[in-house]
Length: 504
Image 1: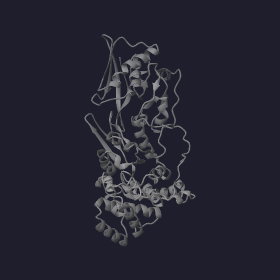
Image 2: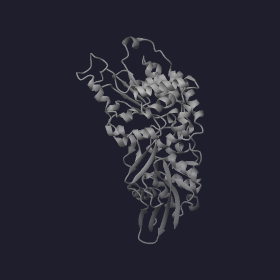
Image 3: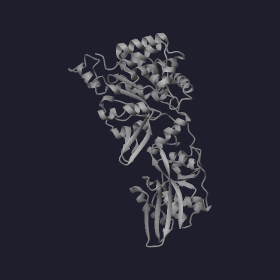
Image 4: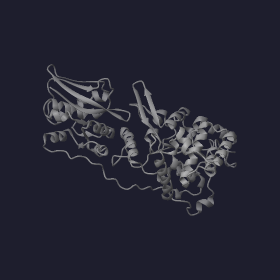
C-alpha cells in the first residue's frame, strides 16, 4: 500500500513543501525514514509507534518506508511526527487516502498521542495557502496560523481527534484568529525629567527610523529614554505584522493571540555572542537583529560588546537583511530595525564630572569610545551627549509632551513617508531611500545646500555621512510639515551628526 500527505521543512522564513510518502511492503517488519531526516525525525518512529499503540492500533507487520521528498532537502524538527502518523494510518486504510493526500499537517506527538505545540505554524500556513491545501496543526498554534487567511486551519488536540475528524465521528471546527485587546503602553515620555535634546532625538529617530547613539554618564536616563521608544512608534501595518510574526514563529516566540501586534523591542545583554546577535547556532535560527525586525534593537553598554560582534552589525544595518552561511545551511533573514545604542563616556563613566573622574581622564574617554570603529560609528544618523539631570529638575513636575502627543507627530511624519515611497520597492522611511530617490526627495534649498557643503568640507563628512544628514534633514522637515529641506533642518541634522566622541 502507498499513501502520502504534505508537511513543510523550514529554510529560514521559507516553509518549503515536503511530500511524506508511506510504503508498506512484504518482508521482515521494519520501520525506516529516508530523505535526509535529522535525529529528531529519525526518532519519530518510536513516538509514532507509541502513539498508535495508545489508540490500540497495531503497526503493520511489514516493511514500512517513509520517504520525505524532495530527498536532497535537509529536514529537521519534531513537527514531522503528525504527517508520518497520518501517512501510516492512510496506508492501512484507517484514514481516507484521497483526503490525507490533499492536506498539510505538522505537529509533535507525545507517547499518549497528544499533540505538542511546535514552531513555524505561521510560515507553514503561508505555504499551505500557496498550495491550496488545508492545514492541521496543534490547537495551541492554530490561532497563529489562522491569521494568514489564505487557507483553512484546523487545530488538532491529539491523533485520536484527527481520526475522529476524518471518519466523521467528530469533525474539527475551523480555527479563527484570536481576539486582541487594545494595546496599552505603561511607560510615558513625560516620566523623563529634563533631557529635552535626547527626547527630540528620539522623536526624529522614531519618525524616520534613524539609528541613535546616546553617550552619557551612568544614571542620566539613557535606558529610561530607550525603554519609552515603543510608546511613540506607530503600530505595525498588516504586512509588517505578518512579516514580523513569521520571524517570531520560527523562533517560537509568538505569544497569546498568535501574531505580533506591537513593534519588537529587543535588548540583549552585552555578553551576547555573535551568533546570538546576528543569528546562527543549531539550525541557523534568527538572532536578535532579526527578532527586532520592524522594531527596535536596544544595545546598552555598547562598547562592552565584543569587537567582532559589533562589527557584524555593519552589513545588516545597510542592507536590512542578514545571510547566515554555514557548512550545511545558507539562510536569509530580514532585519530592518531601529538601532538605539547607549554608552558611558569612559570606563568609570564619570568623564564629564571632574570631581569623580579617574586619574586617566581624558585619555580613558577616547580609548573607551574607540572600541566603536569609525565605519560603525558612521552608520549612526543621530549621536548625542547626555549630562546628569540637576537635582532641582528632578523635584519639578513633569514637563514636555506626553508619549501620545509625540506619537501623533511621528505617525503624521510616517504617513507622509508612506505616501512618498508608495511606488518604490523596499523603501518605507526616509532612512531607506538612496540613489536618485534620495537626491530627489531630500534635495535642500540653495541656502541649505550651501550650509551642507560648508559642513562637509569643514568636518570632513564621508559620503555616507553626507547622505545621512540629508535623510535626517528630510525627516525633521516632515515632522514640521515643511515641503522643502532648508537651513533649520540641515542645521539641526548636523548638530546630531558631529559628535563623534565625548568632549572633555
